[in-house]
Amino acid sequence: EEEAAKKPWLSEAVPELTSLSANDICYQQEAVCIILAAEPGADGKLEKSQQDVVMQAKNKFSSGNAKFAYMWLNKNLETGFAKATNVEGNPTVLALRTGKRTRYARMETDFSFDALSGFLDRVLGGDVQYKPLKDGPPALTERQVEEPAGKDKKKK
Image (cartoon, rainbow, N blue to C red; front, side, top):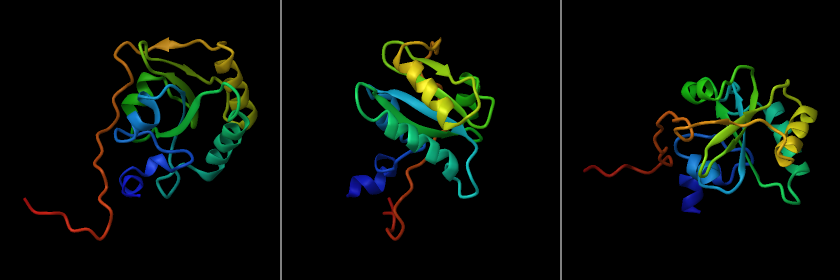
């Protein structure tokens, strides 16, 4: 339970890819990371309509040999990552593979369930063109762990 308070991304349906969550949800996982690079809504979170599309795809590809991890990236905050992966549109979908060779593929169409579904089919079928990221995953903006409210920090 304490783990969930410190790492909320472990229990979120579509967690945000940040410097804190990256290893847990993407970089040190066997899955292909499906990243929705988008501008956040007014509440700083992923727009509900976009999350709904990702959830539809997540449900469609949840069985069988599809090993996808879904997340979103705040493209306004993570400009270095967005630039390194040629994020242009809002939103942009990326498939990121980490491991021995870090590489990514970008969905070249407008964002919709059908487009995302087709892209994921092509990722599964090995039918997408990956571009290498020679230095590994692009750096993410350094973030601090948010302390749960109500706990006084110990003075050193």
